[in-house]
Length: 361
Ligand code: ATP
Image 1 (cartoon, rainbow, N blue to C red):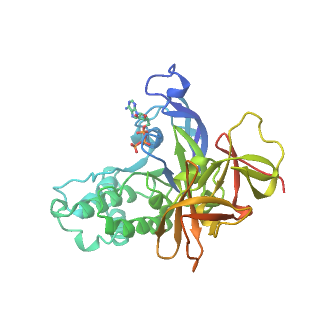
Image 2 (cartoon, helix red, strand yellow):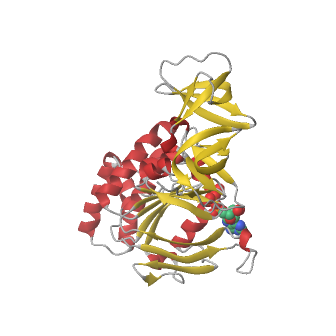
Image 3 (cartoon, rainbow, N blue to C red):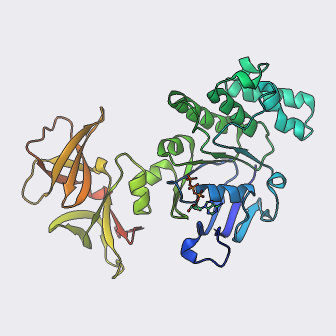
């Protein structure tokens, strides 16, 4: 296990002299703590795999350094970095048994037989593979083969980190939940530094202690699932995390008030120094806006439909041309196609050019 530091890292597939905006990875510095469970989350093309490949040594960054426990690893190959990787598709030897597959990374490094047997038995037990240890891998389902790949990634206890690149893609949907939770338990049992790449927020939020959200080649926020939900540092995080995502509305903000379509919304804190030329927006999660009967002083919106999610109902609405979602309080019955909106001031955030601005109490 190791602490991993990325120092002034940046990467362009078009070479170091390419235009800064064309970089697949914009300049970044960050630390991955020893023994942490991280998810690298973002939409397709945001740079997740590039970052993972830089950590593993498959890609050499155009700029910056990567340190393991303070030692510069930038010029070293994947093998010299002592990293384990699990990819989207199973990487196993069909001709070997399940046990031989799990033992392979240890045998390769000359680990004594007794230690190999003990570790293989431990990993097989954690992944429910113990009954299949003597079976040939070729006869197993895609799910079982991917479990073996996970096992091979986890079997060495001396790795600097285990990197997972969308490892549940081939897993049957009903098994995904089980394996996600299993990976979390494995992290706790094995105390390895794990970095898990995914575009699926449920996978990221179930697995990780710290979720690193990427957007357009940069890290926009790194925090616990709760922090990302409560206080998105960027409008992209607000929108990408949560279902439905955060509502983002253009607004004029003065002191403790935000003006939207001529209506005033109270804010819990004051904003006195917003940058003059910035695009100002407010962000509020649908969970913190209640639908009410239209009334004087209430911002109102048109209702498109009601989504009943069982435990909670959300009204999907329009405020002019902007889509908006709000919670329908239990027992509230909607009359007509208009509703008023009641905001929870403590949960309304202000953004300048998409970045969160802290107010003054
Ligand atoms: P996905 O989930 O689709 O794999 P990602 O978030 O992992 O996406 P990357 O694969 O890291 O994103 O890609 C980041 C950017 O770099 C994209 O614009 C992509 O087209 C570009 N890119 C990735 N690999 C290469 C390559 N080998 N050569 C040139 N451009 C590349």
